[in-house]
Image (tube, rainbow, N blue to C red; front, side, top):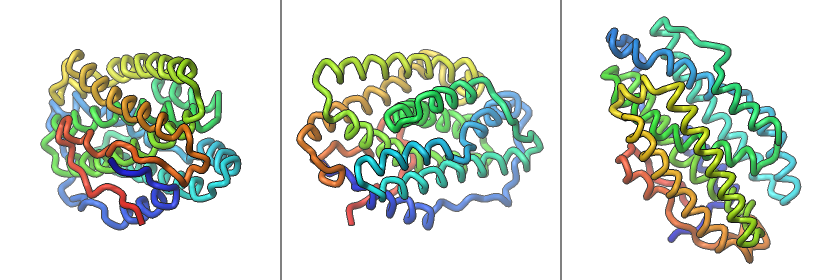
Length: 278
């Protein structure tokens, strides 16, 4: 059992992570085999768009939330989280530019997820959608890692996977705090709505990216099982943390929570040392 990290500790984690990135061998080039190109390039274009955002709406929601809970460090941590996501988008974009595949400006899946976040701009909606998408990202980037032999793209995937593990912990800890004051019935209803969202998101990702996922060795049933196994883990963590936070009066004063990094063991995703308390 380990305690939640405070917003300041998350802020410091993002700074440390930015200073200790994995080496990315850009000199290796972005050449793909014809089979790899057919399987993954169109998917990478769509996913790269999803990783690209100026974060204005999220910053606005985080600013209102941070003011309401008197935790300015949370807004600072969110800004660094956005910067890390933008780095993911830029790495993928640079790879596509080098490959010659180019970037796209619109994708139906990305448009749907942006609409979901923007129509109800509060931290619970944002956090819920991000957890769903980034849970699937763990499966997706592992599939891309296995679908290509290009060392540059593999290194990009490893860096993104390493970052996403901690993004998910950052988000699920916050959602547990947001839900901490809800009774049993309200929490059950919240969980059912999250399940509906994840069901639809998982189907949408398969429809849009099944060729790339299949190239990485995932059949539909394998993809579905891997995605829900990870998400069930997150829900167990959130339920435990919601219960333990019921008596918390200050978001800086957290009860112990399950160690999120254990989720890496599911597929042995490459990891880094987890964030630590100051």
